[in-house]
Amino acid sequence: MTGLARWLTAIIVIAALTGATPRVFAETLRRTPCEVVESGEFKRYRERQLATLDAEQAAAKRQGLSVREVRDIDIDLGTEQDYVARNQPGVRCERITYESDGLQIRGFLWSRPTMKPSDKLPVIVFNRGGSGDDSKLRPNTQFGFERFVRAGYAVIGSQYRGNDGSDGIDELGGADVRDVLRLVTIARELPFVDAKNIYALGYSRGAMMTLSALRDGARFNAVALVGLPSDFRTSQFDRRFSPTSPEMSVARAQRSAILWADRLDAPILLMQGSGDPLVSTVEQTLPFAARLQQLAKRYELVVYEGDSHGLTLNGKDRDTRILNWFERFRNPDSAANSP
Image (cartoon, rainbow, N blue to C red; front, top):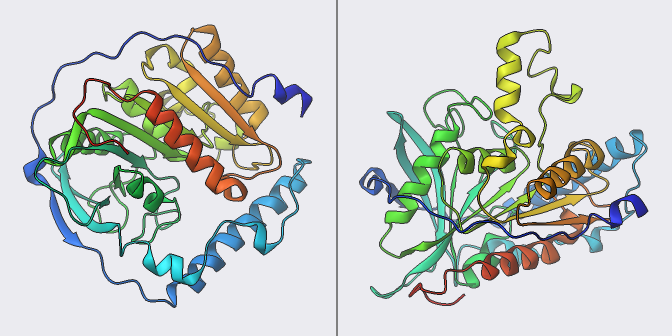
C-alpha cells in the first residue's frame, strides 16, 4: 500500500466553469410516487449486498489483492426499519419517465417531501453502474440517497435506455450518454432546483457515463466517482469489445476517459477500493489520477485499503466525503438553501 499512499490526495487548480443555458425539456418529465416498499424487501436487499461483497472479495483474493476481512456487523447496511423508512419521513421518492432521442427513459427522483415555492435545492445527477437489472436503481436504493436528501440535495438518476422498461438498447457508454445529458437539462429546469449548483455522482459504469457527459457538454460544479473504469483498452474489456475489431477500437476509445481527460472541466473526486477486483487500482485508477495531475486538473484521490468495488465497508465515510466535496464547489452567488 506504500505505493498507493502518495496518491491518496492531490489537488490542482482548474479553470472556472462556463457554458450557455440549455434548451428547456422539463415538460417531457412524468413523475409518479414510488410504490410502498414492503419490509420483506430488506432481506432480499441485504442478501444482494452481502452476496455481491462475498463474490467481489473472492475474486479479489484470486487476483492476489489484499482485502479487509469483515463480519456482517462491519457492513453499513442499516436495519430493516432504516431501510423501510428511506423514502418515508424526510425523503420523497418518485419514479420518472422522460424523453431522450425520441425514446421513453425511466429513472428516479428523490427530494424533500414538502417544499416552499421559494425553495431552490442543489441537485445531484446520479449515474448508476452495471447494465440490465444489475445495479439498477430501486425505490430504496443502496446508494445512501436519503443521506444526500436530508443534507439538502435533490437526487435524480436514469436507468438508461434499454433498462427497467426504458425504450432502446443499452450501449454501455454510447448513445445512452445522451440520456444523461437530457436528464441534466431537465434537472436544471425543475422549479425547486438551483441551476447554479448541479453536481454528478457515478459508480463504476456510471462513473464513465458521468465523465462522458462532462466531455460532451454537461456542466457540473463538481463530480464524484466511485470505481471508475478509465481505460477500456485493457484486456478485461475484450469480451464486451472485441480487440480485433476496428469498430470496437473506436468504441473503446470513446469510453476511455484517460484519452480525453483534457476535456474534463470540473473538479473530480476519485474514490477507489484497493481490493476492487472489477476495476484495477493499478491499471485504471492510478494512471487516470496521473493523467489529471499531468493536465493540472483539480482532483482528489482517495483509496480505501482493502475495500471492494462499491466501497461497501466505508459507506458513511464515502458519502461524507462526497457531500464535503460538493460543498467545496458550491456557487456562492446562489440563492439556494444551504444543505
